Length: 270
Image (cartoon, rainbow, N blue to C red; front, side):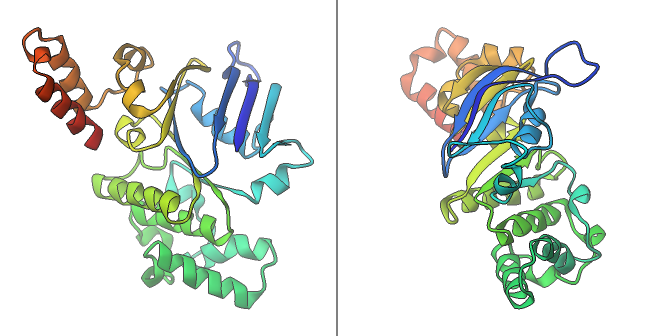
């Protein structure tokens, strides 16, 4: 389990805290989406989780181990992150070398390294692209390579920081399907940092941030009913939810229980 306990953080030169007394938990094998507008603090959370930043106050724990300078390397071995811009993730001249990079740094024997590259490139359907240069891949394919690298390193926690925001609809669909597979088939803990409510709708639980504070937390079906909170947090309410809310405000339509239930189910499937 990952736990934030009263965590605060302020960037140098800023008068306002990026995170202000933030507390939440992410349970093992759970998919949690952290939502918020630009500047809400959600990407700061991702950087704190992997030790790129150090909290000014409070504690971050992984299964009761406090994240410190002494424990950060041990914790990082458990956590993989996929960034917003897939081009920033590549260090190799081709896909195979990129997957090998992290394994080489951890001094994995060559035979084992080649075995893992073969195994995990197949798991993300990228085995046919091992000799391809990164710039020839689509956005969705680049994200798949990044996820293959996380799997090869045997990370049990996957953080996706706005990883679908630069993808086209097909690439976005591919990554969502892969996230679901990572959770259900490979039992990974998934944390998606996003402002996309359509993506967040598929997760187990939501944490909504506004101005560095947690303003709402719960399962999507409950959080999405609180439209005012989402709008005040500058989050784009999905079409299905907007349609449901409009019908609910109509005195005649809201009396039709079956219609309202059907609209809500339509929203949940989107």
